[in-house]
Image (cartoon, rainbow, N blue to C red; front, side, top):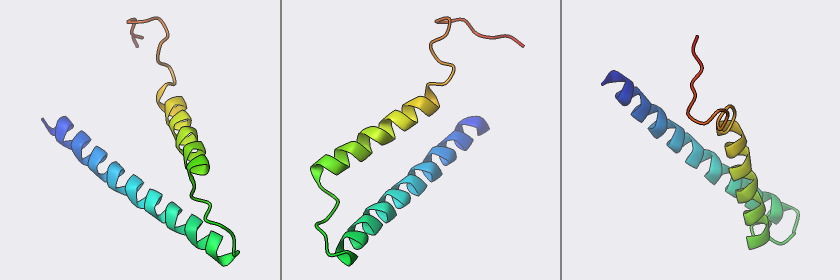
Length: 76
């Protein structure tokens, strides 16, 4: 039971921190664009690039060691 509670807190804290980092990144991108007098860098093309890059980064982090030997577990 403690393990599940610990996981829940980990996911909750990770989600909140991730959301805060995302909002801060969007704010900074918007401010930099305004400071330089340029058009906002937050358009569909750039957002899709960032989104796909994030997904591929997360997939590479999570996918390490998965898919080898389908169903076989390593024993110590």
